[in-house]
Image 1 (cartoon, one colour):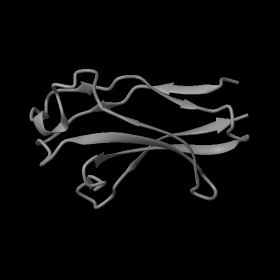
Image 2 (tube, rainbow, N blue to C red):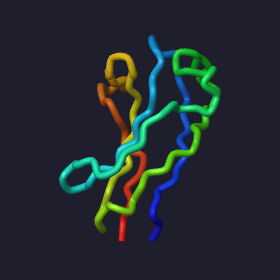
Image 3 (tube, rainbow, N blue to C red):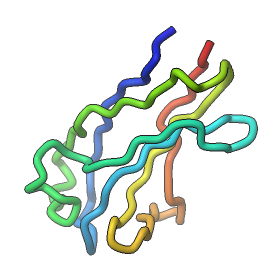
Image 4 (cartoon, one colour):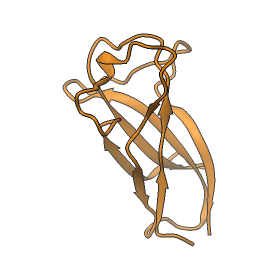
Length: 110
């Protein structure tokens, strides 16, 4: 058992966003949907590359490492959910399917 879940995200953007977005990462209970841990932040190490500059669909963008604390998370099945939001408005970025997040992984905490 570990006390943190560490991960890196990879993105490809078909076109730049209309504003600059931060990324949120939530660990949610697979049964209830309750958020049990979260970490937000800038998507990339290089702050000179906000999402509004992501304009090459052939480029793979690699996030900074994220770490979710697990010390207070009870045993169970959880989903790592990620998405983007504007810090100035709280507006979430929607996928072409109208979703404001995606499930990155399902994990078991023991």
